[in-house]
Length: 212
Length: 212
Image (cartoon, rainbow over all chains, first blue to last red; front, side, top):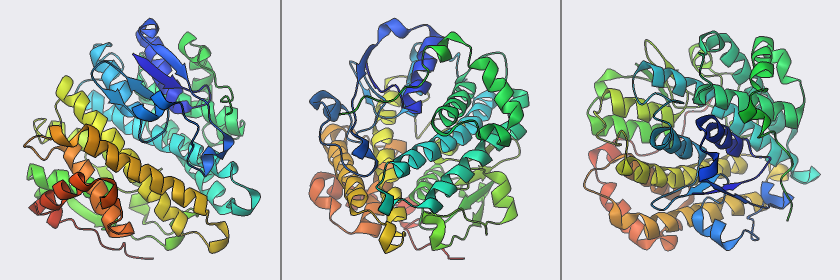
């Protein structure tokens, strides 16, 4: 299977941590993609043809298998968990699945806000909206606080997709925007410091995406 | 169950069409939310307290049940399909599920682009980026064309979540941005014109969201 990646994307990291936790990393060819900083506001016209053919959305991650192509991380992790993980990272059905999906929705909303804030920061000074940056930051902090308040105490032994998505949201916030998020959710931050030491997280620490 | 809605949101429409197709509309209390046009760039501070408590992401739809709260449409439709639909709108596992998720990812990427374009249009003239508007439009057209090219011929008899999400993406594009998308995918447009006549689609045609 071919997985299109960048080292900065938290959506890619979410997939790679899941892959590493499932112990199936050797089943994938990891294809590095390159992006100009203008991606924040402009259609990128320098994508490799195979990547452009794989995803009309033109975002990473994208997974190409013999039978199907997935263009977002939700579809990818659902597929990998079922086909290669025996539902170890997300229950197939029932209360355990719904509880996990509730957490994943909040952590994903947080990640979306972090990426939209990043895109905003890449705009020229004249088109950058300080209000929008503040709106995204507010959402990030609300999401961190809600995970701490409503879900952290019930996190189980398995570093599952709910925990993976949460940890990646903490990690991207810290890497891109600094430790400010810790004030919004100090207990979550303590949990994050522990899980950040897992080999799956250490092997996928973010780095800047190669430019083109 | 309480479902927080607006008449404009395609993410809400996706959930409501699924509910109508499953014949379970009477199980829900539909709670209208109101939004100022400043939502495009500013944190909305006038949300009803029960809605704000339900969703730290502060977006619709949100579904509140006795046991769990979901803050995005992916989690909601996964839950409803399993618990109230016997997997009629999305297979529980296997090739049929993966094929549907591949379509849903592209249609959802299209919807995201449509909403980001709407938010951009709500900005003041000085902060609005014509490049960003064009980038979103380009993505929309690529996604419509890809669904037509790669998936339309294999759509089955059931108006399932892949078809519902696709139809809602067509419908929002038409309502908000006019018939231009039809040039990118004329066969998809003919399909859309047929499914738009279904009662589930007719009952959920978009209208402007109430202001506050």
